[in-house]
Length: 230
Image (cartoon, rainbow, N blue to C red; front, side, top):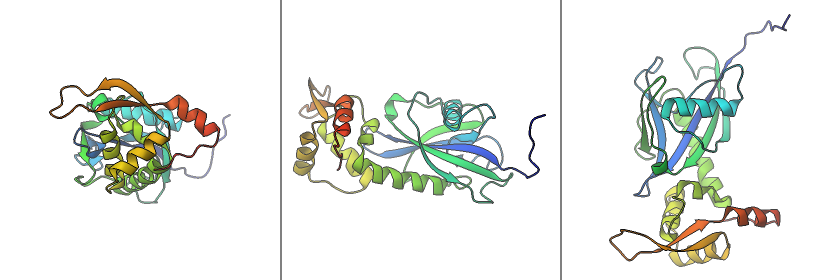
């Protein structure tokens, strides 16, 4: 006979904080509108209950795909939230994940138990269900800290980008202006950008050079003790 426990056990869920950056360099987060109670009609982070036959990350990826249509992205575990009364249905512990994606390359479509799915600017959020405002705050704090010492910010940009786009990315996430000359000198001296023989197309101003992040070079440098720092 399978072993059984005499003690009650909490339910387990996963929630996903997905950040994106639009063309106006506005930092946004993906939210879904709940179709079911509790908090029916309210906005929340994508997520749901973990099945008995799947890992936490698999559950997070499944829920994200089912509720928003977003798939094939890298998730990183953020934090575990276990306040006793965080879910009015029952005792529920949730494991939160966060991800960075190029917003324009990941169109969203509500499905499953979501009535709608949409991108919201970080500074113009609706009221969130459960304790999702707390989860989002911790995810944003993690993003602001980690973007300084790991090149995760490139996940928010198109595959080919300008130095202006790169600087605006960091200014948006960090919430502060950066000196143009110092920023470009520092980022170029790292040797992590590959300058392309291409320029912007169809822009109303002088077309700027395009660059790509050289992930292979970064991995090699990191093995040698290189420290990425903005």
